[in-house]
Length: 355
Image 1 (cartoon, one colour):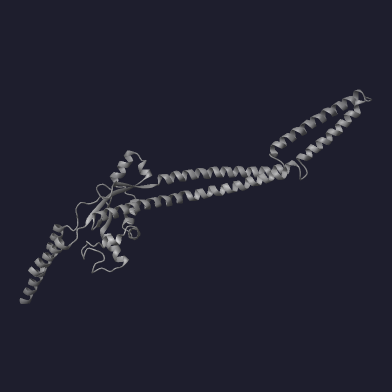
Image 2 (tube, rainbow, N blue to C red):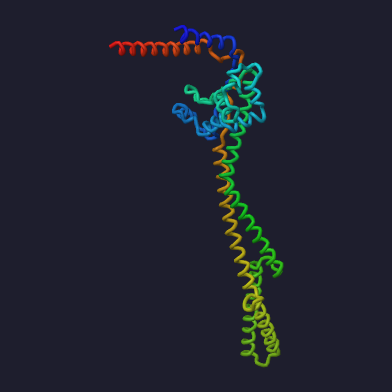
């Protein structure tokens, strides 16, 4: 019993009390909340908290990142994580690298996951980050760096979500705007080439002129007919006939400006109407796309997530590791259990041999 129970536990006690370096634990509490949950009603928030729904997939993503290789490599580059675990005050077993570990990134990552933990508190539903190092200042500093890195991760998540939701809508708006600019340039070229601002308004004035000429022609023809009946020898008859000829020529010219030849107003009006209809369609499409873009922006705002620190990383006053009493109790229980099991096996073997 002395060799199997007392001696190992005595050695273990000497290591824990005299050799083992004290390790300090810095703890931070945080939660990852979305804009949607913040803007919800108090009743909805109570139901979420009661049902545990307040823990979203983003919370698990942040926790997984804190104990990931990416976070470890970031701490190695920016915060001297290797020196923290290879402290001069650390004992030969607890430090890294030590005499029984391999000096590669995979072994260091396993060591890192033993000293940095992020998990959900079942009672408060808050995320708890714990960092254990050989110095109170180092524990607090590494915990602060991890929280800052988690905030950057949340910001990157927001940016990616916003790009995914808004990017396509913004591209459609930009493409429609380019088409509208091209159409405006075509309209400008049409006006310059034909010296016409608005063929529709110009056609109204031409139609009015034609209507006036037609009325004057009809009136003059009626006066001529009446004069021929009442006074066939009147000297005004040639004047009426000359007026009628002039009016007919003017009416023919006005009609030619509206219809007929390729340089008349009707082909120009048709082309202008096509361009106007195309512009109206593009304006409606643009209005619909802008509405979709605003809706996508509102949805992106609702899906934004935030990391809120409930309690900042503390600077521990005393070491929490290694727990001498707990470790000694476990060691005594294990060694005595092995010793008792071995005694029973040996006694059983002897009885079997005797029998």
